[in-house]
Image (tube, rainbow, N blue to C red; front, top):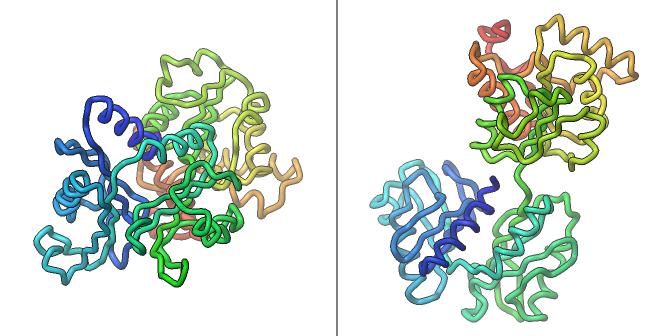
Amino acid sequence: MHELLSHTKQALQWQQEGQRVAVATVVSTWGSSPRRPGAQMLITHDLLLAGSVSAGCVESAVIQAALEVLETQTPQLLHFGVADDDALQVGLACGGEIAIFVQPWEERVFLPIQGRLQEEESCTLLTILDGPSQIVGAQHLLHYGEVLYSDLSDDLQMDILPLLLQPLDAPKRGRATLSSSGEEVDYFLQRIQPAPLLVILGGNHIALALAKLANIMGYRIAVIDPRDIFATPERFPEVDHLFPSWPQEALPQLRINEQTAFVLLTHDPKIDDIALDFALRSRAGYIGALGSRRTHAKRLERLQERGFSAEDLDRVYGPVGLAIHAETPEQIALSILSEIVLCQKRPALSPRIALPPSLKDAK
């Protein structure tokens, strides 16, 4: 489940129980930092917690600030660096710097975000961190040109409109400043996207382990297997989409983008080749297929006969997964997800080239 979705569900539950909730968001980092901008933690006045903004280094100070924010209803922008007395007291010894914005959690802001994510759509959230006191903490939420929510005046909305109308595929995360009525306004701009989609072809024992681990890691999961004895809710209770059907019937029902990962596990060309054809014609960021080197070589020959180029074939990682001497289904699942993370975080780096010599022949 997307972190923001789980946090929204938790915050709503706490509010129904009479809790007041604050949200702390990492808005900028420098150097070594355990969490990236956009990471969040929820804090209630009774000290119930969800999420994190560091590896425990600054949480105690953030919690104290959150209690003050809940009392005063005034947001706070916190800064921690290795040279700061506060940082040393709370244990920030990683050599980096981090800025965290703490404000009351607002249902009217996060419910529209929840709706977009459930519809597998992205949105853009702008939060005012510093500036005229009357707008600090104000937020503006946009989705494909539609204003979903805004605390901002019409004049300030016009000031930020160029920022929010950048191409939708442009990077939209970061802290910056803009000028409004002669004053500097510090803001945090965040593109909020659905959790990445993992498409698993085949419902075998490796798929069971892979689905469980991917669920823990926050992926949305689709499992496809025309052998309906394998594709059952009892076997895959954690998946978002379960298709006891052929790939050509199931795949067009999914939204495939650069964050999508395909993992083919059936060993059956009648199933895998159909999915490979579809995946290679899509924008999927990762395509991996289970099988020996000999099986993979034959697979590439069939794809070449279908008209795919050498560049196309190089997108297919096979044998699937990093070479970690995996033996059990759980270890194989770990190797697969590790390779997916590596390829999607650093797309120019091919594990097949970058592996240490001692591991290159371990598969």
